Length: 174
Image (tube, rainbow, N blue to C red; front, side, top):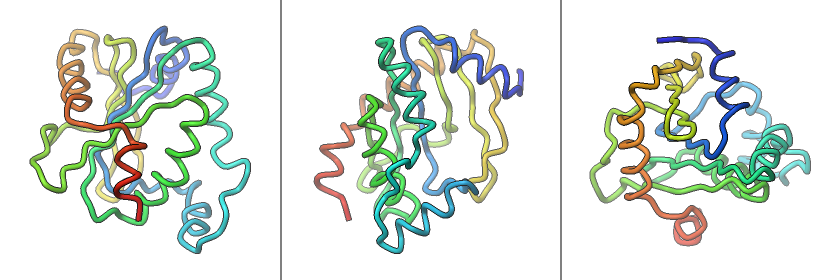
């Protein structure tokens, strides 16, 4: 297995049809987001340029008719980080064409228990995203393509058990 950020970046830059992301953590410790998280928790307005680099990338892909979408496995009550990510991140990212789904395990078993965070490109290439115990990103691990059937099962199960974020958020927004 390859643990190369450049290999992962290449997958993201060259996918042709779709990029799927599974998120499983309740908190992601992202140092560059700390200021925005504090602002969100203090009730401040979202900066107009919030997440602009990612939005530009998503627009580039969706403008080329490529699908960028993700499922977040979570349970309520939401952590402060999840409230921030869903309210500021997901809501804004949807304006660039990214799609979001929620697999809420509050009142049911998690059908993906033990499955790590990952990106999956064109139903063929996966990159497992490694995090430490506090949610700090350690790096990607590009998985050999012969593992694609496993990641297809994970993606399909996540989508089968999830619901579109806007519908979920309309019922559960704090």
